[in-house]
Image (tube, rainbow, N blue to C red; front, side, top):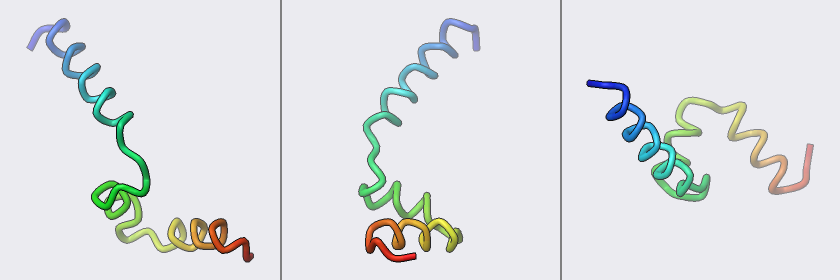
Length: 50
């Protein structure tokens, strides 16, 4: 794979990734999977409780 093709794929990936939001089911599942400290932090922020 040459550098030009690799760069096009990278740009495409970044474009797709920029469209994700944490509230998207698949993205949220991947972000929080087996990461309880992260889940805890988000809940503290959302609920405004320490």
